[in-house]
Image 1 (cartoon, rainbow, N blue to C red):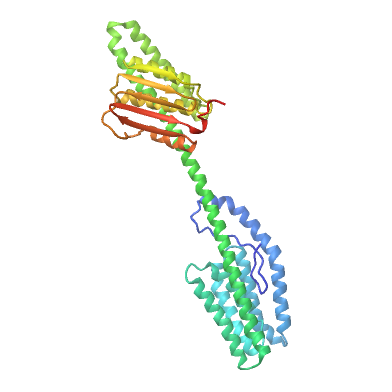
Image 2 (image 1 turned 90 degrees about the vertical axis):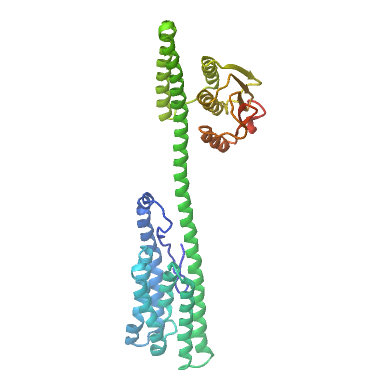
Length: 393
């Protein structure tokens, strides 16, 4: 709880949604806003009311003094009630004008050194929320409170009057305003944290969508290209070797069925790639396309990285079949990585990653590295997880 009356005005306002938080955040916080408002009213309004009664009781020496001082007290209480409801903007300036008028009338006519209480209280709730010139307005308020008190000295000179009408009102007004601006900055930070949390949630959703799109691309893009190759092969063999053509068509059927299954598993977050199966699949596809394959296993792949390496192998296989014109492929496996080299590169320099770009980002997030190079007619894709370079554990 935070506060700002003559000593302090306790209460935590419900902060306005000024940071661009989405509409769903507003809906989620409506119940909380209601509870905070009731809590502020129940815990802070009674002591503020008591402070107002004390201020009036000390300074009122005639019945008509009540008519002069009461509007300032009422303005402060109305402003606080609207402040707890996050609706002070609607009543801020009327309350501030009424309370500001009470201070000079109270000081000059009633002789009340505490008549500044209302204007200081309303200002502490209002000025920190200004979007422009808030500090200039605070300086103007302080000058106003001190100037009115100094004007009273013309009627009641002396050190005691200076303390009661200038030093105390000015000092307390300055202190309360400093606390009010500090509290407002605190709530700004809380709002920024809320906005940051909302953005993090949105980014998590976006990352998950990118991951899903990448996995779907791995499944559908790879399968469709293989189906295209096998369909072309079956078309060539349909007259010369009907048995082989039928076999290719059966494999196409099985491949499509498997892809449907994998797509369903992806949709229900049950999909897991098997690196050994991907190696065998890649070997069969390359050989079917007339590409020689050499697979070297330097050590067993760590189980914690095998699925990601399987995705790299699948995407690279699709890229080689689709874009390269090579005749040989070398696949090397280590405990923490995979290297795929083919002789179908054209030109030198870093090639475009295409579908591997999403995998690259995911590998970086998981502590891995993915590099793709083309040099001397060879295209090399290398994926490694340095943290697992010690072997399977």
